[in-house]
Image (cartoon, rainbow, N blue to C red; front, top):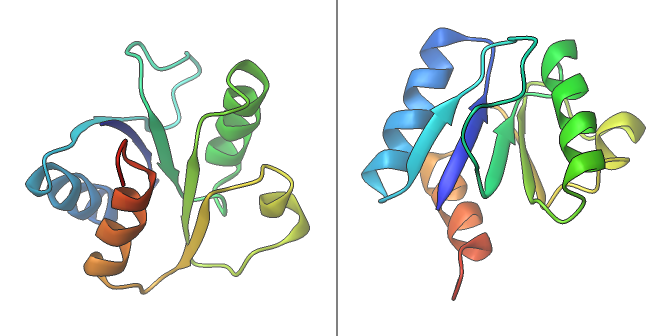
Length: 110
C-alpha cells in the first residue's frame, strides 16, 4: 500500500514513515506544499490539527471520496474531522502497534 503521510512535525513524520515502511508500505510525505501530491496513494495518514493538512484532506475527499483517511492527532475527534469520514482517529500518543493494526485493517485482504 502507498501511504501519504501529512504530519507537520518532522520528528513525528519520520517516526510514522519509518514504522509504515518497516511494515512493507511505500510512503510519500506532504509537508504543506500548495501542490497536489505528485504520486498516487492508497491511504492518507495525517494530523488534522494542522490547517494545511485539514485543507488537503478536504481536497482529497472531494477528488477521491473513497480514499481512506487515518487521523493521527493531538486533538480528539471533532465535527470538522468527523465530516471527512475517516476510517480511524488515533489520538497522540498512540502505540505504533495500534497504527500498524489500523493500517492493516484497511489493506487489501486486511
